[in-house]
Image 1 (tube, helix red, strand yellow):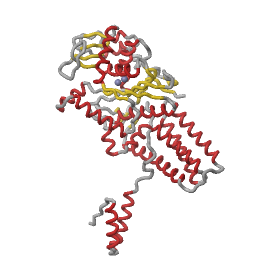
Image 2: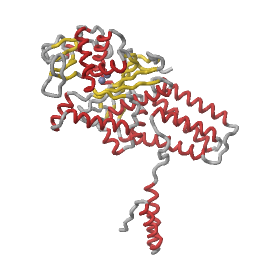
Image 3: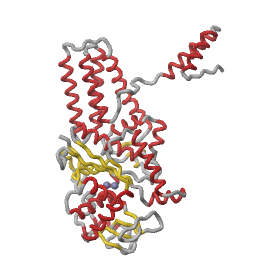
Image 4: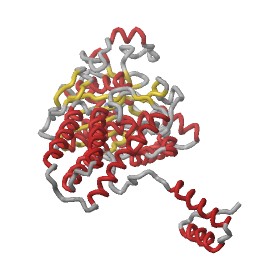
Amino acid sequence: MIKIYNTLTRKKEELKPINQNRIKLFVCGPTVYDESHIGHARTYISFDMITRYLKNQGLSVFYLQNITDIDDKIIKRASKLGIQPVELARKYEKEYLEDMHLLGVENVNYYARATEHIPEIINQIERLIANENAYETETGVYFDESSFQDFGKLSRRNVEDLNVHRINPDNNKRNPGDFALWKKRDDEPFWNSPWGKGRPGWHIEDTAITELYLGPRYDIHGGGLDLIFPHHDAEIAQMESVSGEKPMVRYWMHTGFLNVKGEKMSKSLGNFLTIRDLLQDYDPDVFRFFVLSTHYRSPIDFSKSALEQSKNSLGRIYKFMGQIIELIESDLNETNDQDENYINKLELARNNFFKAMDNDFNTPEALSIIFNFIRDFNREINEEKVSKSILKRVMLFIMEWGSIFGFKLIGKEYYEDKTKELIDIITDIREELRDRKDWELSDLIRSKLKDLNIVLEDK
Ligand SMILES: [Zn+2]
Ligand SMILES: [Zn+2]
């Protein structure tokens, strides 16, 4: 039984799909105006792991993400660079998809661009106007916050409290908190609509896209914690007003912030690191491991030392796998009289692992079970009591962990890279040969290394 912490109810609830064993999942995608930073990566790695786990548990998952490819930020940046907004958006969309690929985020079934869903957006706005949930002004079409009784039910903010603090730049709005569904503009990229030239607001993009592909009600909507208000509250207001069906989403899931020295990493604070910057110094798997060693809802503190730790921990698992494979290929017995004992220990570890994952995807707990298992099993290996059949089961367990956490354990270097140390040894020996004036042998070493594209220079 999988339990999920639902932001809507502030409780862990048993996951019950709306339709048999199918899960429809939507996660807010990026606004493609610049390189994605590692705070975004955290969210997408988390939902990738969640999807992998749901599939491991026999659920079929349709995972949809939007791409916000029209927006104030895109227009502003494009005009600064003197290029078309669409050109800018496509460039950063491509980079985003490359980044995700490197990080092993590969379970999204479809990326839906906002600009390719303008008819659906206009259609949804028309229905909101017909239902008297939206109205037109000189500057655009707005959602009437007061027309939706449950407004703010996700963030649990009191609408009146909020309005006190909000400025109202558009005097024609009925309530200060009313938000734009359609912006009337003709000096920028625009589309024709019943309200003249313009472009969509941000919140309407998600619900027009999800209504088309997932229907008016679906299982899970995810995103970063900062999207709860106003973005996700606005989505609920739009969709539940249009369809009259509730709840729009059964389980709202939100990832915690990625912090640097206790502050949220964000573009506006200027303390952000892009995924590309990060991957210059680190293997993508190391960052993925770093993300998954904290629970997805908890804040996570980014630092070089935390990444070094992750590198070491992941290295321990690789090394363990390397040992297991080597032993399977050795001349150990296929079975022995200790097998039953080990099968029980392995099953216990597996059960605990899945129990942790069932409990709102508790990856740090699951990892500690894996590391305890590795430590105990290493002791058994050292005492040479294991059989090949046990080793094969252990290998499958670690590979199952890898498939859920998103690590390809086969074909990876399991041992630490000792190339540099080896070259140091070889050059030391060669120095010694040269001191003894054994030119023949020292030249042979040099030419053999040259065959490997390693060039030695005598200084
Ligand atoms: Zn959304
Ligand atoms: Zn969104």
